[in-house]
Length: 385
Image (cartoon, rainbow, N blue to C red):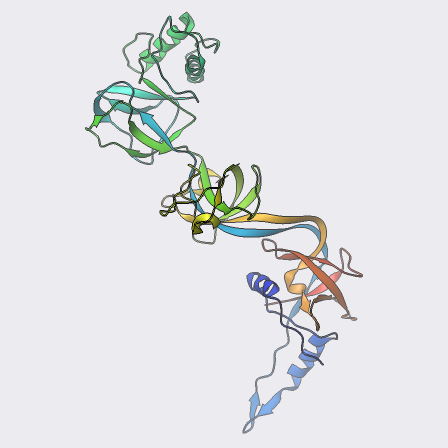
């Protein structure tokens, strides 16, 4: 009997991940022969029995139809999306109240106080750039103010972008509810517009002067995200693609969704900074100094726990997916002489069916197979570890 070729490194790695022992066969009932050989035993030396080769235990699995995927693993950094600052626009003054790092501030909450005057967080894309009050020209900033007052329950009427009497009355109700001086106007710097909730990362020291035009409070959004840098020409992704994120301990995984893909490849600087402006400095494929494309991946907020912000993670990106194909557990593959693989049909015949292996799905432990006589439901032998 000729010696079977060694397994390919790919199948060997797949078996190790599945926790199974490798099996190599010739074109005959090798398992039965191995079992018989083990039963006889051998003698070696001065009457001492030599260790007999153990039979490879097997179980039975079905050939199934399934969707299988091939994934590529890249490194990433876990954090939060965006980088935002609350700018002092009211004029120079001492910072008299500041939120703690890690606090999440939402619509209608005070983000800081300068010279005792509160700055309130409202949601919007257009930054505040002028005083709000009767007689001002209409604009998108007024519309943002109206929408926020409505969301907080102060009923300014239609969000038409015009600072009319209904908007003025709503501002007065808001000021009265929060113990402010009731004027019906809001001076520049009284509110700040950000796209959403602000997760505080840093502030200026309490009691120090706040300079006009500088950030008093800095932070990120409250949307958990992972940033990676993909080498140009590497795995292709697009917004909406699903990925799998493995946390630093290596035992917890969670689903992720590609939120954005950079349009321009960049070269990280010597400090390894990421040009995406997203969830931190991605340590992906592009961290070696070559041109890389920044990618941001969103994950459930519960995925970030204390101490994991800016932690390294692993991201599995699907590089190939075949749907509705025949598949077997990778531990059903047997190496045959001359190269290639086969599966052994369960039952009295123990016949071998040569197969061609396709996509190896590490997540499910399945491998795509094709060959003469293969059909869904066929029982095949599977090596047990």
